[in-house]
Image 1: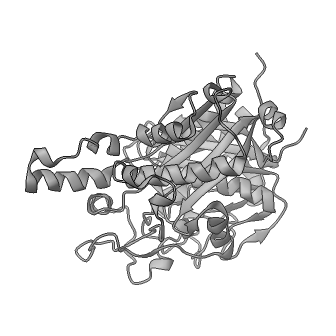
Image 2 (image 1 turned 60 degrees about the vertical axis):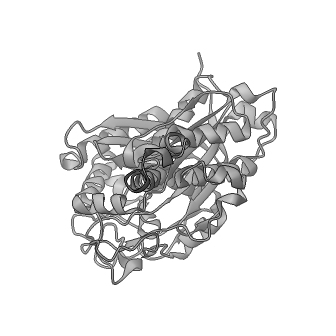
Image 3 (image 1 turned 45 degrees about the vertical axis):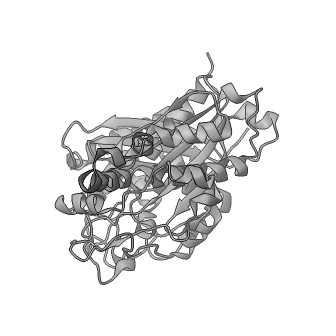
Length: 414
């Protein structure tokens, strides 16, 4: 059976840079940091006291007030970004097409805030005070579950949980579902909100987070010699994917075509990338092969680029391994320098960024790249966004457990 072509028709973002795709995109192109002193809890006893919090978000703008308290924040964010993406796409889900519209939305850590809160309730007030909504608040698939219920999407429904690669795997899986004919449209992406004492404390225990508390805006500095860990962020990134035929049948505006999806495992270590970025390199190559894309066609890579010592270095090596001399002609940037690391939402947010790059022919910068690491010697678009022709882009996501996902998008051509 001939594989169907798949396109992006709608996008939605909630990030530390703003609520809505255009607000977040504006912040990225301006090179603005969304990292601030942490306000969600008293972090004075923690090594890390900074984060990329979403400010001004009111879940009641998207959810009935009586329903809000039945969900944890990662679900609120997923619903908001999904509402934006569906509205942006112009897709109308009715009885006639509901079974051909699905949802794949994942999260890396799900309802950690609910777990922490109700553990305290249990200890202080006893088991009878635990809400009956506790389990639905925290399980990862309820983000997509609530989105499907709100929009009436009765097609394929699943939830990915692959740490920092979650959003990209979700979009890649949705792409394949449509490509093989199991759905005409999918709402796909990632969501995360774990800026909590255990979330920060757990990553601090691993020495994974930046401790540059005196300069929050400068703490996330991918590829810079002074980087000392990632900065946690929160948010959601969702896109609507459709078969090209279906999108055209309803006159949809098309952002881009998704053409390639690679996924591999390092099979090496719980948290450290494989030596020489071997697993990442195989994933990049797999995505190019899947899309029938030559390395020389790629104009821009949105790097995983978390601002960790080994991660940034090994991703750079992986890019050079696959792209060879073209690696030095590519624009590569890490938007995590501005948003922080949104964990399970990162891949969803960055996929949206990639298609907006093609829409506007501009790529966002890597801010805080003051002193490039000699081991990171590519063109990371330092400090300022760059106007350029953008016709083919790649988004990289590499997660704990050695789980890797890469997506390739191209400008739609006949």
